[in-house]
Structures are given as structure tokens and as C-alpha cells.
Image (tube, rainbow, N blue to C red):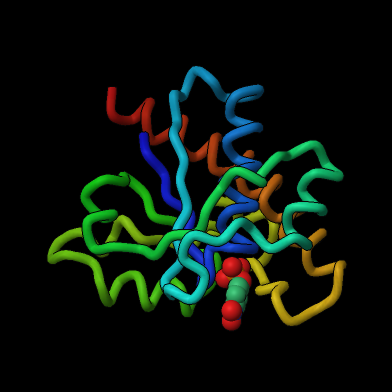
Length: 159
Ligand code: 4NP
């Protein structure tokens, strides 16, 4: 299963979730054979590395996201990925607006797979302080683990 994480700029939230999910999946859910990528609904930062605040906060928890580069979401991503997971409601609306006919339901909120977290959105840390980047990491870790459980159930249901 191929999973794409989507935020606005693809320099803070979605690359953090991509890096965390990839590393946790290798360690804890390798049997699911998941692959991950991320993109932004906006094109402001195409080609940029993740925001240094995201890189440093991730590195402090042992996640290396320094080799990721921002790209913009394309309609073709709806064919290439099984699930396109939005960080917030604005992302979800913009994603569904560009989905090819019949593929809108591939776009969902990332945290809809982690109902126990009690949040619908991963708050945008870009204009805030350092604690916002820690919250993104907390939600990336909880959300990824909940996603693995949900995906395992989806895969089991297909058999
Ligand atoms: P992200 O954060 O969507 O989590 O990557 C943002 C990055 C850049 C901007 C806004 C949010 N910006 O306005 O440039």
C-alpha cells in the first residue's frame, strides 16, 4: 500500500509524518510493506528541504528528514497512491478539489485513523514557537502507529 501525506507547504508537517512513519514502519510494521511520500497543496517551497525547526526537532528524536525535498501535490497522485492523508481540513478540501473523478475518497484526514488522539487536525507549526514542532512529532508518532493498525485491518479484510 502506498501512502501520501499532504499539508500546505510540504516543509513542516507532512515531511515530518513521512519520516516518522517510514522509520516506525521499518521497525514495527515491516510486514505491511507500506511505502510513503509527502506533498504540499501549495507550491511555495518546491525543492526545499524541510524547515530547519522541523529537521532539528525530528533529529532530536532520532528521525532524519534532511534528505526530503518539497513537492506540490498533482492530480496524478490520486492514481499513484492508495491513501492521501491530509494534515488538516483545508488540505483535505484542496485535495478533493483536484481529485480525478471517482478518486476523491482516497483523500482522508490523517488523524481520522487515530480517533483516540481526540484531534481532527495536525496544527500548523509554521508561525508558532518550538512547542508546535514537538506537537507535530507527537501526533506523527501516535498517528502513524494508529494508521498501521488500521491498514493491517484493511489488508486483512481484502484477503
Ligand atoms: P506545512 O507548514 O504546511 O506544515 O509545511 C507551512 C509551511 C509553509 C507555509 C505555511 C505552512 N507558508 O505559508 O509558507
